[in-house]
Image (cartoon, rainbow, N blue to C red; front, side):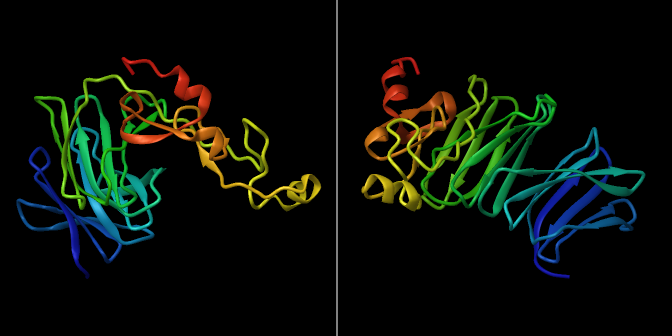
Length: 242
């Protein structure tokens, strides 16, 4: 009942699946045109992928979430919701062999979700400087292709081993020098000092101030192809190979 934003044809099942701004996932039988079912999500649907073997549908939405929906006996059920993006999930791609889901977002990042590993692991790829608009996976070459509003097409080697990005810690003071962040009024008053801005080290995830994270570097092993911020200790520990 609104703009169609994603469409998938499944040759194995002879299904046509579609999502749109009406917040609906629909699927039809291509042999007779009959509508087989629908599932309503909580936000505008923006992207779609489908695993024909397990009949799992992946639906990205405007809120940055990915709904994993199981189609069993034409009856849909929500399995889980993947939360990792802070912007619209604009593109999805699927690796049926390793069962990896790739999601590209307006937050400029790509997340690789290990669906088949069942360990809940995910790592990020950072190489674009604007909204990620499209993803395509080439299974024969084990390459992920991404394009963005920055005018760049990137090709990612998915045979390379990468590390998960750490969760960012929450703290009211710098976890290296103990300087209070600017919202920590009590400590600023007691120490008679001005608060500092909070940053995060991309390698360890610690909350640090600008002085303690003034070094930047690319770090491909965690998917950072452009320079990002590191705390002093992590920057000094980076090897040439990394």
